[in-house]
Length: 456
Image (cartoon, rainbow, N blue to C red):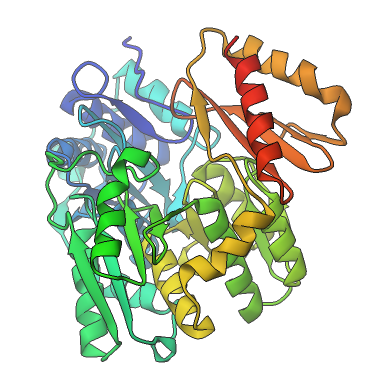
């Protein structure tokens, strides 16, 4: 039996070659089919150079398990979520490595209703079967059929249902697709804007899908990946900038001056927007940074609910609470009316509408919140002994904490500041987030204190 290292907490990611190849993809397809016994599964892949061959390999594995395939082509992850739910299929698989380095690929797996398959809901069993590589023989007469289908028009209609186009004032938007999978959807949205006479001008950069990523891996969480969007916003005097990661399940914002807006503050904006239309609703947030979201949601008459970080956990909690919206500081945004899934396209349409309705710039909308709850942004540390380092930090601060929470790593709160420290579910790093109440220098000094303890 071969041990497969590409299986993570709630998806599949690995280096091309020994960790992930067509044989492993085929076995994943066989294992998915044998364990879940679906009738029809939707498959798609991002723009990476190996995504097409890996997608076809996983499709063959599914077919050899007796599963019919609907291949929706080169798509972002949320198009798989949409198609699985919209077409009433039994599951979906997107081949993507999102923002990982160019020598990686992976998969995101869902079941009926676009519910995520994570370690707690079947991924471990799929891994076990794929490692055993000893599958039930299915006669040729019972093997699955394969067909191609485009759902781009239906998907575009779906995301437009989240906005009221009559609210839009003239806007100029810079949109950076990062040479990833987003470009074809931006084209479809632009065409619909033009057809409906919505006064939005879109300036496209790094627009063409290109799996060689000539302008670098699209990951706007990295400061070095932000400069092109920032410069384009300034050059074109745009109202805001929007940038995507490779499979566009996350979108990132830049204000009218080209300043990068941390995803944390966008969560607050969207929470307030939803609660104005749906008072009393629940808002899901993660524990890394939370005070701003809790403050806004409570003031707007909503109910903030904390969930463990990660899309599988957030979606599960969204369904459990029937929450209208959920947001993570990592720029994942989840919507009840999008099968409780995350979307990178819906947020920027909502923010563009919000800027129009409030007749304020994006900077004006977020600057007060940034000053009220300054935050460190996520700081990653690669450590030889992560558990020992986290224990050192806990021992240094827990006696002075007025509130402790261990939902996801350690979260300690004090009168004027708080922090969360957790190991990553997807990378071998420890992640630190610190925030304060209207005291940036306190936030910065505490951040450095904790880093010093972590890395000693």
